[in-house]
Length: 370
Ligand SMILES: Cc1cc2nc3c(=O)[nH]c(=O)nc-3n(C[C@H](O)[C@H](O)[C@H](O)COP(=O)(O)OP(=O)(O)OC[C@H]3O[C@@H](n4cnc5c(N)ncnc54)[C@H](O)[C@@H]3O)c2cc1C
Image (cartoon, rainbow, N blue to C red; front, side):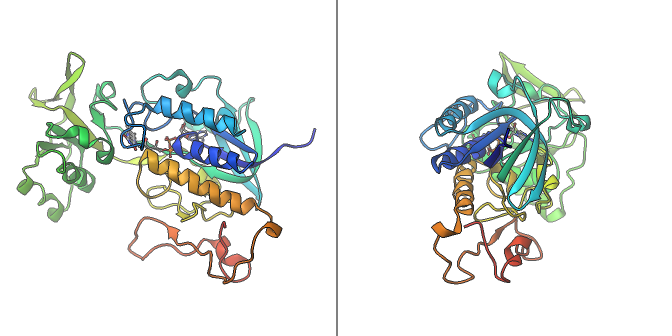
């Protein structure tokens, strides 16, 4: 039987991956999307700020996206892509472990089981996918504070993103779990909605530079460094944070600012340039530093919002489509510089990243996905 080669393989079926699958399907491309069904926002009670769909549940948004992607002919696979490598500029091989039951399918709450190093070993069921283009839409994971019971209120009273959940925090007693510049930054961010703020470092010093820490007192933001024993619920809702000292601190909302990491290492496996936090660097067409590998959604630098991820996926799909259109159906560029897109990276001290290697490789001038 002839080898099946997809035009595009998408890894990740959140808003970024599904939006790309829909657009690529509309361009009549042969698309496969592999998703392990363990999205970052699974626990949230409703996605805020998604145009036209206020408070839609993550499961509902995905279900609608999956149905739409299928309508345009995308092949949806439940599985975890464990390995990815480039064999040629337009030939990529992904290997995935099928997953008979995903969390997304069951629509059940709770953080997904952490993957172990041995999960990346080949297993008997591992299957290959060959594609001409790859889109990484794998998302991120959040580092959790060690506070027993937090999972009971996560996504409802405990959050990670002031942009997403700040509005619902208006005038509420709010605790920021974390330390250093990150925690101070999050507290300052939350002053838009509430002035009743306390940073709890859970047994560690605040660890912020003096000029950063100095911002807190004038705004009435207290810092508590005692170890946290857990949370107290009454009638199922968050009431207070319990310190090891026996003291309780009343709170209605918790935000935590510990850290994030990529959902998997496929960006590294494919050799894509990444920033210090592991985000995959892309240009404005969501093309990575590896030719014909694209990335979209939370895994790239920039805002982490559902609607932004969906927009990323759509823009990436347009660029992927253009990269697949044969030359005879395209107009030649008038100037070598016409299609050059700035490389999208987080601002860095050295003024940003150099053009990706494939951009300068062909005729001495830059090329892009378009
Ligand atoms: C608690 C919480 C609440 C939030 N609330 C809001 C909100 O109110 N409004 C808002 O706009 N945004 C909100 N966000 C942010 C929003 O959820 C993200 O910006 C958005 O989900 C990112 O979409 P994505 O497609 O990039 O990634 P995700 O939605 O995380 O999807 C990534 C998918 O890739 C899969 N995957 C990863 N690795 C592999 C692999 N190797 N093989 C196969 N599949 C893989 C995962 O299982 C997952 O299904 C919230 C986030 C959190 C954590």
